[in-house]
Length: 507
Image (cartoon, rainbow, N blue to C red; front, side, top):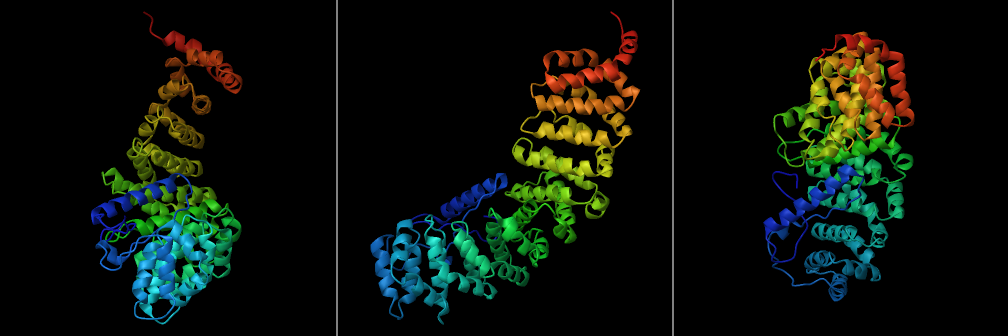
C-alpha cells in the first residue's frame, strides 16, 4: 500500500484483475492502520506470491479437504513434482477449513519442517509460504501447531534473501497474537535478539525493515509487554535501530517508518520511565520529524497515509515529554518551530481527522506545561488567536486548548496580559455559558489566573460584562463551579464594579 514501486496485496481468486486486487489490498491495509491509530490493534498480514499477478497456468485445484489430503500424500515421496505440489498446497491453505484439515494430518508439520530445512532452496521457499498461509489462519489452534517450525524461521532471519526473510518475519508476527504459548516459546527461543540483529544488519533493506517493525509491534502490544518484552527490547540495539530508520524514504514509501513509529509508541506508553529512549535521542528525533511534517502539511502536502505516520510520532512525543526532566527539555527539544508545526497539524486535521487534531493539542499541552520558552513562542509567533478560535469545537479539542492557555497563563503574569490582549477574555465569556461543565470549570480556572494577574485585566473583564456573567454562573451552577464564581466575584472583582459602572457610557 505504501510503496511507490510495488504494492503487496492479498491473493485473489482467478479472474480478478490486478488493479482490483491492489485496490482491495490498499483499502484493507488502510483500515487496519487507521484502526491501530485509534486503539491498539493486533492484525495479521498475508503476502502475495510474486507470480500471482498473472492468472493460474499450473494445477487446477480448489480449496477443500480432498485437495489438502491429496497434496499431502503427493509431497511425502521425494521427486521432481514437489515444488509444484507445494505451490498448490500454499494456495489451498488459504481456505480456513483446509488449514484445519492439514494440521490434523499425521506428521504434516514434520513434513513441512523437513522441506523448510532441506537442501532444495525452491522447496524451502514454498514450504515457508505454506507456513505463512497457516499463520494467517483465523483458527486459534493453528498457531501452536506451527511451533516446530519457529526455531528455523528465527534462524533464517539472518539470511540474504529479502523475500524469504520477509516471509519468515510476517509468519512469526502472525503467529504470536493467537496464543500465549506461542509468544512465550518465541521469546524463549530469542526472537527479540533475532529481530535486533536482523534490523541492525538490514536497515538499508526497507522491505525487511517494514517486516521487522510489524513483527516487533505484534509483541509490544501484548498485555504483559511491560514485564516480559519491553525491558528486553530496551536492553537491545532495537531502540537505536528503530530511530535510525524513522525517516521515510521518498522512493520506497511510508510503510517502514510507520511500523517503526508504532513500535516506539508502544515502547513509550508501556513504561513510566523513558530515560533509555531519551538517552537515544528519541525526543529530538520525533520533534525534528514533526517540525518537517508540520511544515509540509501547512503547505498543503497531505500524502496518502501521512496521518498514520504523524499519529504515533505525536503519541511518542507526548509520552516522552512527560518523562523528560524540565531542565533537559531545551536539549531534547531545542526548536521552537515545533509549536508552529503542532498548530499547523491541529488546524489541518481539525475537520477531517479530529482525533489527530486532539493528539496534536495534547502534545502542545505537555510541551507548554513543561516550558516557559514554548509558551512564550506561542505568544511571540502570534499563534494564540488561532488556538482561541478553536474553543467552540468539541470532541475534547476545546478542553485541551483551554489547558494549553492555562499553562501559558500560569507561567508568568505578563503572559496573562498578552492573552487578554489577544482576545481570550471575550472567548472565556462565551465558554462560561457552555453546557459542558468541564469547559466551565476550566474557564473559571483560566479566568482566575487572568484576573489576579493585574488590575488592567480585571477591569477589562468587568467592562465586557463579567459581573453579570459570573452572577449568572452562580445562579445556574452547582457545587464547585458556584463556589469558584463566588470567590472570584467577592474577593477579586467587586472592587472594580463601581469603577466600571462610572466609566460605562449612558444612553
